Length: 202
View 1 (cartoon, rainbow, N blue to C red):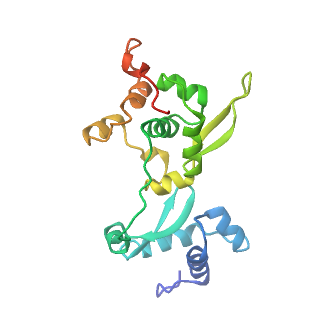
View 2: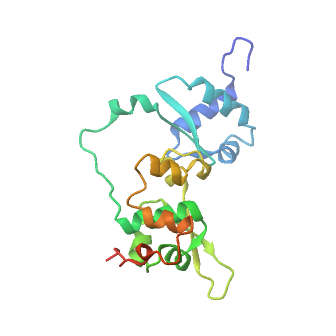
View 3: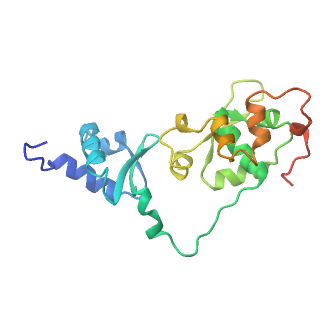
């Protein structure tokens, strides 16, 4: 930076690129777009510069984007919003993938204790929150699933390390309706018949 704290050309270029981008960009993508320039310092400068402004520069996963300051979001919220509701089964599967990824469908079913309809994973993939992450190198080579950067963005997470713990969810009253999935993740008793209840995928 110049001594008078005027942004240099690289900072301005990074700012303009992120502002015009149609989707969040990683530091590597920014560097490539800007002819291999080292952008880490420029990103840190912009993050600090926008720290208390109406828009913020935030990192979600490994990607950077501008977003409205949380305390001003209500000013831009549309009067009529389309609410995306997940079934109980989809909520359970999303929780399992988020906390246990990469995970196969068979592993998801083992954790839930019930079969999982193919449509449940399809819904999560169509929402952009879950992706196929390759295949497990075991007989049959089953597809394994993981969360996406859009999942982190939607839930305001920098990384999966920011996912709340079981105790935090329970204290906040947010565990239901994924109680069975989280109980399974933390090791329920083998005799827990709740985990064996009929699947609600249908």
